Length: 324
Image 1 (cartoon, rainbow, N blue to C red):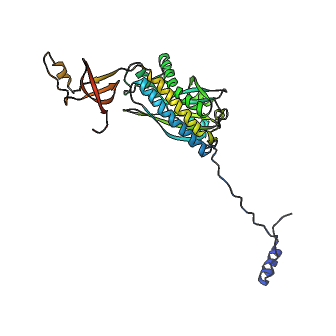
Image 2 (image 1 turned 135 degrees about the vertical axis):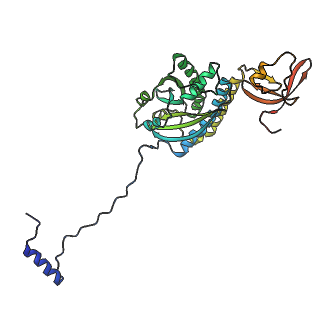
Image 3 (image 1 turned 60 degrees about the horizontal axis):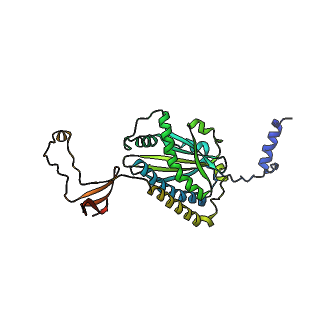
């Protein structure tokens, strides 16, 4: 059967149209278009915005404690600050980690879930150089980590994870321990690439450069926590626990021996002037009566030299860098 019309039928239709008697065809009901909701599967929402903000606030305490610990161990000022947090997939979060980076796998206990701490390689190399007695401000050339480098990197990661574990113990009821280092390719195999993941980005600043530390927390690790981020009733208790942890950290650091010296002044000389110095020469050190209290490479206070009984001493005037 065909739907084609014969010439006679076409002529009848034209005649009917002229008389206004076209046959009525079947009515076609218009279908209402469905409303479509666009979903970005690369941005899974495993935490509410309130829970994510609470997670960030707790890690602001971590940044403060870790800054104190790093500055003490490296004998130079290092400041940590949270600059971003986002909810991604495991594969997407790894894709945003700056390269090259050193990836440390940490185990959450109780349970057997893991998180990933990713530290830019430049920062790791600077910490290694400083721990070995070198300068922190000079970034070594990129290189393949040797066995000694890996051992020193483990010490640096332990220093970053210790205060983080203290915060997590109060916030989530979990402890963290460094297990191993992984390459980016092997890290992709730790979890399914679609696993919802919370990424926390921390900036590490010193006097000469800036690097990032990325913390990748998969949904499985948060589910294994004994405490819930959504329980706002414990927020003040957690704040107290954080304060206790910070106080414990300060007490532990308070027992560390640190050499402090007093500098009566300083002068800038050329190499030729230094080589020409001889017995009896006088080097002017600037304004008389001013000194500085120095720990490592950091100036802490302005001071005034003098005597305390029969001993030489300095009196602290004001913190270095403050207005006088």
